Length: 116
Image (cartoon, rainbow, N blue to C red):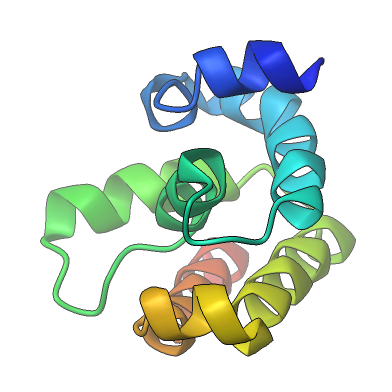
């Protein structure tokens, strides 16, 4: 996917079906890694799409779990590594100060997927 197409659809990722989410997430991750910035809306939305906040309601947690369940353990490690890089980025990490908590939530939801 071109950067332009992703940018024009920065809000689309959270709206996709689980299958479409799994298909398009790699493109959004690659874009986000190239644009780790608090001004990149795609990057922010990608973080939100794979990791709910600590205070998220059960519906949002279930929604997220449904989308991350199809990923293999290796793919989940890639997503976790993306969250780690976003968290460690000085600009983005300070702008999105809850990335560490979201990363923990991602791991918890993955563990639920594996135990189901």
